[in-house]
Image (cartoon, rainbow, N blue to C red; front, side, top):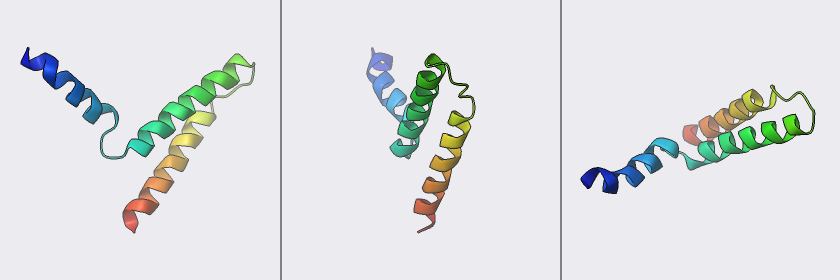
Length: 64
């Protein structure tokens, strides 16, 4: 029973971690890549570009 109560806290900490904006950016990148692929566009480049942009923004915010 204790494991069932601890599961939501673990999932929140694992998926969102320290910076929920990074998690949202990755999910948005995955969704955008899937949408472009479904439209017939080669979109392998979108997710790495999204991750790099999100990393740059995160590093800029952390260095302030």
